[in-house]
Image 1 (cartoon, rainbow, N blue to C red):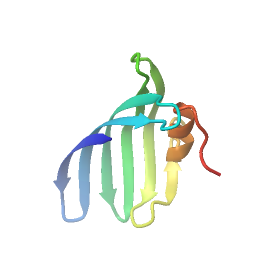
Image 2: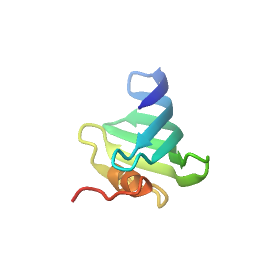
Image 3: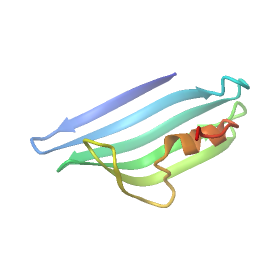
Length: 107
């Protein structure tokens, strides 16, 4: 479950969007839950999306911070192909969320 806000500025050749996401992730097998609050900005231009900010900010039920990823990620807008990313961002969603919830990504 999640809620998100998106504030956008749209120009003829580019878009700037600021997102705030609040989400709850639950391991259905164990009931273990993490909450997430992220703040990031997407810059879309010339067929690419550059995302900058906090893209993972996960806390356990006690409020303990368990995962933080922040930095920059650049992808091809049409395909999602990752072009580059800074060291503290993992562009693989399942590689981050599954272990954080006590599981393993599907192989």
